[in-house]
Image 1 (tube, rainbow, N blue to C red):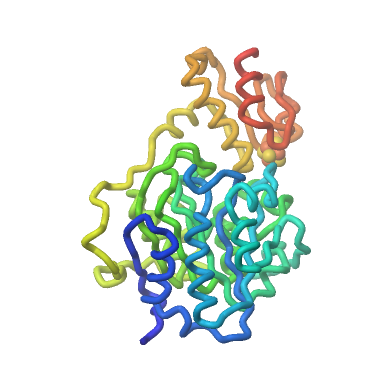
Image 2 (cartoon, rainbow, N blue to C red):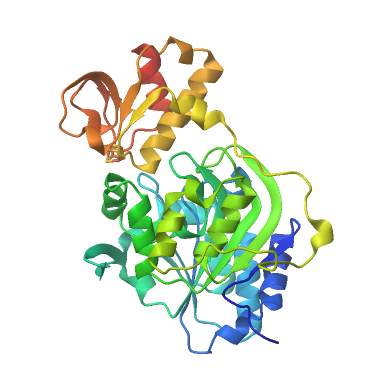
Length: 365
Ligand code: SF4
């Protein structure tokens, strides 16, 4: 059987994650891309310590399907690696999301990339510090969740690699506006296969809480093509998500999708409902003045504003709330969230502060 081609994507529909992972890997003949001695790294999205039913994280059953496929075909050098977002513990995420159990069951090491050494990698005069453990892999299987993101609209394959850098590098990415460094990271860290958990995602928040059943798994070799397709599923054009086009310009992959690009394995089971991103975040963002905020910080504020909306206290906010590294060292007659806004007349410390503290702070203001 021929192996999957770079310019193709495969989709399988359903909700049985383990079997779907196994079947789609078989259909793509992934074993034809591997050799026995390869060090294979699985990179799920465990951005926060919440189970996959929250819509935030990669299903451990999907990862189990990949492990079984690899082991059944004689590939045993497998490691799971991830670094959760700033303010969350990857170890905790491994436990809460069911990965510790997977590790125990199959004897697969878990690597917390927050504790990994880093190596400075450079392209075109710009550099990124990337976790050395991932760089040492021979074959990286990127396993993102198909989700909305309150700053970049979409998070899928390309953005999932942010878990492969340190917390300080994540902060620097935000200070650079995210899109360019995400594209550069993907140029410097090549992944070999993408398997998207599109079974349960979240079309409102990256950190889950408003899960949506999407009942599909997408497989591709080119992360740019995967993200271009993921964007189209959510009704976005490639231009709406700048890091996709920037990655294409850097030669990471192609956004060219045509009628023969997508191979649907079980087309008859395709869900009929369209995937529509929620407008909720856009409504809440109208209360925010943001300049280069980290995802965890911005996410906490959006969650807090959502809570206030439900409590009926949001409409009492008569000034926009400042947030982000762009306000560091500035004296402002404003209310700010996070240590970066400590120059505001009123500011909530924390890096990042949590949503509950933000609600309390803003409601008592
Ligand atoms: S306060 Fe928020 S925006 Fe500033 S560095 Fe910390 S997490 Fe990032």
